[in-house]
Length: 104
Picture 1 (cartoon, one colour):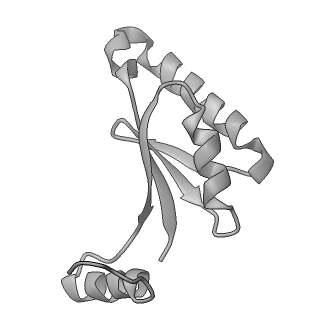
Picture 2 (spheres, one colour):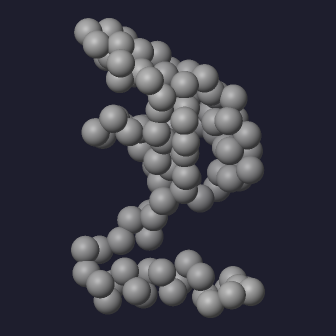
Picture 3 (spheres, one colour):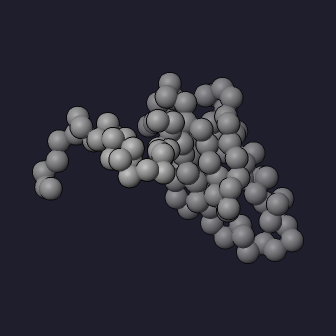
C-alpha cells in the first residue's frame, strides 16, 4: 500500500480570483518546509493537497515541519486501497495487526 499525506487548508478558497496564486504559495511553503527530505511529489486535488509519503521519511519530523506551515488546517497520513471490500479488509488488517487496543 502506498502512503500519502492529505492536507486540508484554510480560508484560501475565499480569495476568489487570487485562489491559484495562494494555492501556489502554499505549495511552495510546504516544499520549503520539507526541503530536507529531498524531492517532494505533490499534487492539488479538489481543494486538497496530496503528498506521496516516502517510507524513509520520519513521520515525527514531517509532522513537526507541517505544523509550522501557515494556512494548513489539518493533515493526516492516508493509505490507498483497492475499491473492493475484501481488499480493504486485508489492507486494514495489515495496518492494525500489531497494535494493542484497550477497547474493541
